[in-house]
Image (tube, rainbow, N blue to C red):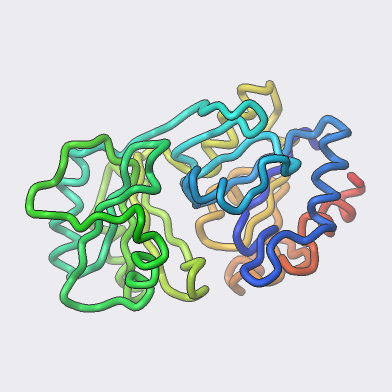
Amino acid sequence: MIKLFATDLDGTILTRDKGFVEADIDALRKIGEKGIIRVIATGRTLNSARSVIPADFPVDYLVFSSGAGVYDWKENELLQSKHLGTEKLKELIPLLSDRKLNFTLHWPIPDNHHFYYSQAETGHDDFHRFIKHNEQFALSLEDDLPEKDYTQILAFLPDIDTYEYISGKVSGVKTVRATSPIDGQSVWMEFFHHGVSKAEGLKFLCNLKNINENDVVVLGNDFNDLDMLQTFRSAYVVSNSPQELKEKYTVVAAAYEGAAADLLKKLSIL
C-alpha cells in the first residue's frame, strides 16, 4: 500500500518552458485526498523552491538542498537541517582551488540561497550564468573565510572525469553529482554533511509519519536523485532522464507530458 509519494522537482514535474503540468497538479491533489503523503525532493534551496512552487501547491513536505533541509509545506515550519560547517570547508577549498575550479559556499539554512563565490582564472560559462541569475544573493569570497556553519559547496566542473577525481580525494562528506538546471548539460558537484541525501530526508519523514519504507514511491530524473532511487524499491524515472538512469529504473512519461500523473495511473492510485 502506497503511503508516501516523493518526486523530484526540476525536469520531473517542473519544466523550464512550461512550468507545472496541470495533470500532475490534479494527480497530487487527488492522492492527497486519499491520505497519501506528498513530498517534493529537490536540490533547490528553500528560497528557490518557494520562488517556483505556489503556496497552495498540493504538497505536504519539501526535502530541499538535496536533503540538507526538511520543511513542512503546510505549516511553514523547518523540521530538520544539516550543515557542512566551516572546518570541512577549510579542507575542501584548497582542493578545489588547486584544480582551478569555480565554486560557491552557501550560508546556513534557511538562508543558504545566500553564498560566497570563488572565481577561478579558467572561466566556466554555467558558473557565470549562475552568478548572474543569483546576483542579489552573491558575495565575492575574500582572502579570509567568514566563520559560518555553511550548508554546502557547489563546484562547477569541466567534465565527469573531474567529478570522479575529486570524489576519490575527499572523505567525511557527501558528494552529489548533478546536471545544471540552467543549461541542462553542465556537470555540478555538491558537497554536504556526510548524513545528507534526499533518501535520508525521506527516511526522516517516514519516521515522523510512521511509514514503512516499502510503502514509498519515488520519481526522479537525474543523478542527484540516485540516493532515493537506490534506497526505495518502488523507484521510477521520467523519459527525459539520462540514458544511464533509464537503463536501471522503470521509465514513465516525460516531465512535460505529466510524469507524476502517468506513474500514479500506472500504479492504479488514481
